Length: 74
Figure 1 (cartoon, rainbow, N blue to C red):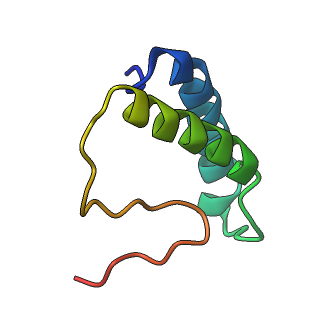
Figure 2: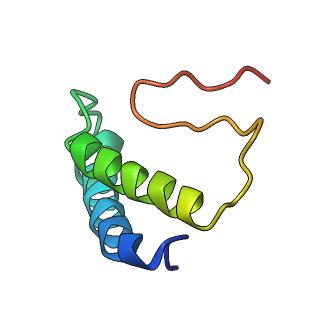
C-alpha cells in the first residue's frame, strides 16, 4: 500500500519493514526493551504531515498516534 504522499512511500516501506522485523524477532519473543524504528517512524510521519498540508486534506479533530503517544481510552 502506498502512502498518502508519493514522496513518502519509500519511507513507509522502510518503516513497515523495520517494524515487522522488530515485532516478529523481538516483541513477540518477549523483548520489549524498545522500538528501534522510532526515528524512521518520525521521518515518515513528518513526510505524511507535509503531504497532508500540500494536498489540503482536512484533519481537524483527528488525533494522531505514534511513539510516546498514549492510546485514547475507549
